[in-house]
Amino acid sequence: MIDGIRTLDDFDVAGKTVLLRVDINSPVDVQTKRIKDDTRIKASVPTIRELAEKRAKVVILAHQADPMDYQNFTSLEEHASLLQQALGKPIKFIDDVVGPAAREAIKSLGEGEILLLENVRIHTEETIIFEKQLKLTPADQVKTIVVQKLAPLADLYLCDAFACVHRSEPTLVGFPEVLPSGCGRLFEAEVRVLNKVSKDPARPCLFMLGGAKILDAFKMMESALANGTADEVLSTGLVADIMLKAAGYDLGKETDALIKDKHLEEFIPVADKLLKAYPDRVLYPKDVAILRSGKRAELGTSALPADGLIVDIGSKTVEEYGRLILSAGTIFMNGPAGIYENEESAFGTKSLWEKVAESDAFSLIGGGDTIAAAKKFGVEDAISYICTAGGGLIMYLSGEVLPVMEALRSAK
Image: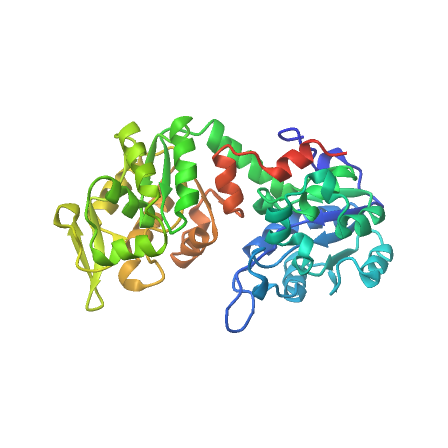
């Protein structure tokens, strides 16, 4: 067991029908609708392979697209093909979840065979409206169609979707109410690594927080500083812009307009509180970069306000942060330092990622843009652990109650 949750080691799965909930939600090209990155698909392979080799009848439940993003609820047919390539074993696919065809396909499975059902998001029960508006308890979610139709066909439920650990949906918290349940190998590995970072990190422990998801960053920052997990927080991206605003700097019309358009002004008082409470532990940039006529230009904070949109951190900040990175024992990164997709504003992200790769520290990254940046700059193999979760990772490190963890701990 891990954290009160059963693992694969606690079950004899031979000849059993196992409902396996995975997270193979993948970035999709807007134009072609083809999968751009198969990181999560490959990460799900070890559990699937182990179940098949132990002669389980494996029924995979998965989703594609955020629960609010209904326009991108694409089929999992391509996922099945990529999963089959990564696994090296046949994957059956059916474009149905709970209908007669899906149920018959489940009943027909032989030992060691694998079936991937269609995108569970096609059911209203698995969308954000259902989750946020109805706010059903796990016991209530037993009454949903997906649980009522599929649970009677299974002997066991395993969750390997750590990236969904913060969700409360029937395929995540409903099945543990009625079936013996536990977690898969990926879920188990993610929990072990995050426990290491949150409870016993090698010191000094740095949190490098950037990107555009301000709520996630500030939620994690407050918790990590208060409980002593993070020795220092290095702010970049929009997180750094908010810190600079809180420190009294005028960033210029364009950056101020961006902050206003994204409704981020409410985080300035939060940043001010953190800077006053932890003046030596929360760092913000010494210089920033803007674009002038398409060319990168750097200016120190004393030269603010900027005459253009702030798109990156500057060289002095990279130098300061780089020294701290190289002397760290643990580094957690979430969010790029600037608009890394463009060459003129990629310097900060590229430089810091390369410093992390050079460091001897235990490094952990999570979140789509963070992982994408690591791949873009060729440092992913030098990162100690790449977590498949984004929001779930942040909530875990923030110490929040996570519905899936609770459901699995109290499973039947």
